[in-house]
Length: 245
Image 1 (cartoon, rainbow, N blue to C red):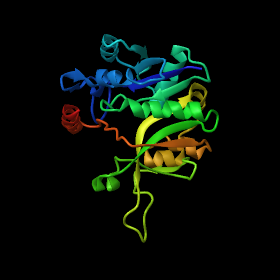
Image 2: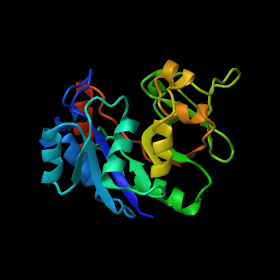
Image 3: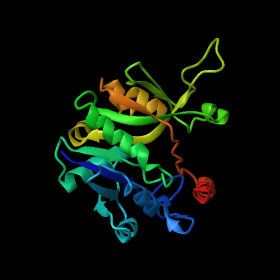
Image 4: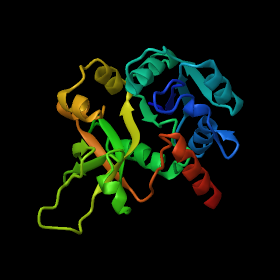
């Protein structure tokens, strides 16, 4: 069994076309993500699944491997699945799905996921990360996805709404979902074949498809937030944060 980091990076985006090649303090964002991934202990290889030669060229400039995928795939998971097939991964191999818009990701968070799979083989189908929200503005922000989980840290639900809702309480922990996933190649292949779920379609959250079909998603609570660059306005924020490191 091997563990790989697979980064989906699509050029076309309705909100932010060409996002992976956007310069963050003078360097393409996808290259910054790769450089963070290279610091992760326990990963055997780093691949970028892309549909664009310009992204592939930028990837290869920093020593990662670009895997060309179809441009019309319906979701990021389908891109991951197609790339895994083309790489030749086996069903038992572990994939860490790192988004290509996380130039500030801390390598320790990815190592946390890798260790979770090694420590609990076969206990869950999928794993991801959560972070306790400290900014009150983020609680009501629908772009900050919230997650609730049980006493065994298995996800109960993900939502763009504020969950849980404290009817008689004001001060209680609320966790945001950090969009980094881990799963076996066999699971992602089965997942990609499932139809879009009712809740998934409502919330526009792909991970709900797993819950709707009875798969366990294990949650690891991280002490480190991970900033995503979703819009051009986020670029300046990311540059400021990089300047503080």
